[in-house]
Image 1 (cartoon, one colour):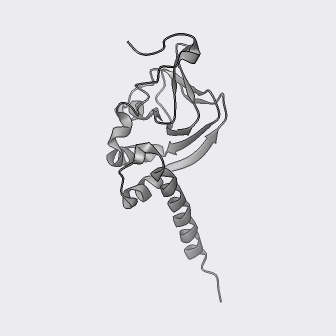
Image 2 (tube, rainbow, N blue to C red):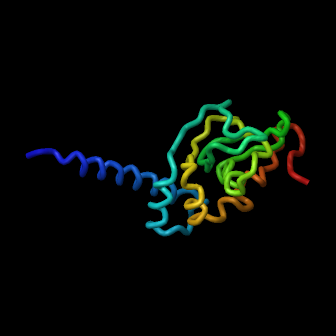
Image 3 (cartoon, rainbow, N blue to C red):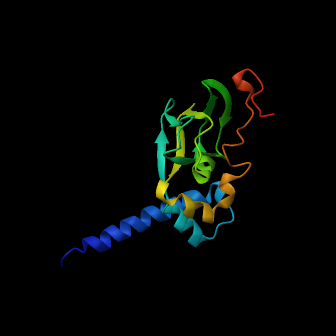
Length: 156
């Protein structure tokens, strides 16, 4: 009997998407999405592990990629000065990409990061399903205060 490579490829693709949908269901950003919506969002993201020191977005440049943090911390730098940290319950670059503006800060992986990278061609569809991702408290427009930086880094 001949193998059906197309059917096998489709089955593999569905299994990967379903694994991502289960992963999304465990993240608080996606709470409240129905299974069909989770499956759709899963098609818009890739799961990545980024090493500490990797630059995710650069101040003054439009974000090429956008991320949802699953685990780890990103360091927010304004003009090279540590300003805040971004953690699990936040997005990186999504608000700037959605608003089509340049990033107001640089974000560097402060620790190894597990992230969901949003396909740049799918940003609008992602935000259609998860509109609150670009709003407070999820957005990197609202970085967290972090005493470990040695000073108050909250926005005033």
